[in-house]
Image (cartoon, rainbow, N blue to C red):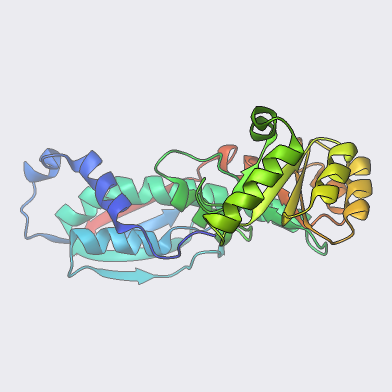
Length: 283
């Protein structure tokens, strides 16, 4: 789960990337004291995401800015509606415009796609997880969008969970060696960490259960039928997670197995940004 506090340092870095030594287009033709108003217009139906971040961006650029939200994160919004209104210096509005749009368009696209997947799971036991297949330096925002869309976060990075995947297992010499070393590491070095182990077939599942010491079993690239068998084998002794080859078209088939989680990188890396625009007028 991500830290819910907005990462100010990342926003400051993004503003620095865009503004550099100055917004010379604005500096060249608009007095710094001029005040203005801008409204965020929704140009296609979507799940709204990033409202609080937009407010934060404008507050960083103009401490006296007045942000009025008409929608909130997670709202289903329609083309033609207005999400928020910002009153601030024109310099602040124009310097923040592109970062606000880029962030909200991307986040709203992810939230919208996530909601479609979550709706497919409605009525089932299964919860939707994201993955680490994210945009470098933008992970917090993408994972926040997943939460807004109704999904759940998997680990944030390499540091908040032990996840023994195929490469770890192969490099270590097998399941028994990898799990044994991971359990010992948790016991003596990082006792707060949970351990998840990837399995590639039903034989792997049986081996992991015989070894024990872990908290979750990932069932990677299983067919829906084999997944059902695996979940029944595990019998609630460990958390279960299905991954690999799962799409919005077949996710319901996998959920019928009773698996606890389905992880899907596509809700982030296949999401398409939604169309939003920021229209400014002189106050």
